[in-house]
Length: 388
Length: 72
Image (cartoon, rainbow over all chains, first blue to last red; front, side, top):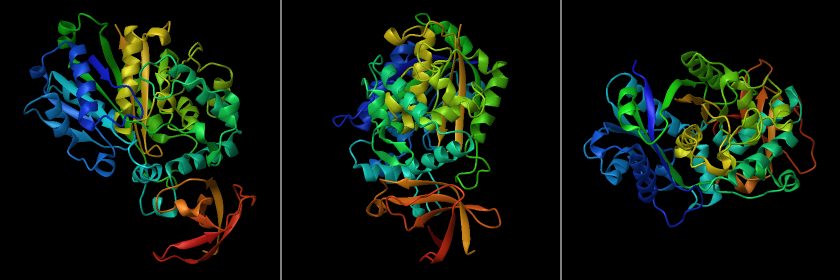
């Protein structure tokens, strides 16, 4: 297999962007990534675009062709990837594999989602299509409800970490204040977070990630090409990549306080990289809900099962902690433009590795990890990156 | 199946277009006597009513789709 590098990144500001169309979002993020890579469009061999819900929320399918037209990529092959909230990472995964296998030298991957123009119930209904419609959604399940059930089970098996979940949200908003692309860069007091209205017990408003419009793209290249074009930036190697699945429904999983897809994808990525959890300087993990962040950091091996909350309380996961988690603000405060989220996470990891993160730049950023979940952890993609 | 136990649950305060008029209501993963788990809305929730993991719920009949319904 050939080695693959990230040579260009671009994203829009994340947020409620009523004046911006899908085309507009793709145009900005895609062209930023191409310009950042310093390549000609004619060098791009294929395009993979993650999108989850535009068919339902925007009446728009065939996203690969739409993005290709917007970016002026001509007759190259395009693919739209869909794996719920992991749709963007799937685009990244398949683009990486296509280069590794030798099909192309340069590939563009990205994601886009437009959600905020619809009423909350419509968005909730659209997102609920990522679960089993007949067995779960038609029993009244929602995603906040499903992760709330995971949280209650976690409280039962380990301990009540509602306070630590609030700290996750607090850290996310603090980090977002240093990110110009973040949707909610707000100094939200912990008391307000802990006192907010319940959405689905035990999750309250600030335990939930955001509804977001946004797009993010990256340009990938074979290592020899990256060395030729990447003059302006530190070369970023993809040193490990993992992708695993699990049963779609919550009821079919033997254990819901740890995600099997996450552990399997992590084992693949760590194995390829020849590294372990202790070698990772920082990570962007899938905090669709605050409890999910805590479980993810355990599944990634950063902390023992049931101890993820302690790590948050001890400040380990804060920006100035030993294992900074979601320095971007995460899905919680940077935003969760579903199909773009996996790429938005990678945008942050690459920005940190390059040393371009400005006020939120980490002192030690040589090896970073991204972890993106789809559904109630039925799909997981994990990538490990190293700056040369 | 007459009875099942709550494996985990949540009280939902907001929901989809189809269920928004029913909040607050309980969603749960239930475990039947055979140990098989399944997703179910659990009827009969009122604010202030206790719900807990391990609690027994009882079958109330079948819904229009032929699925067994349960209540607290």
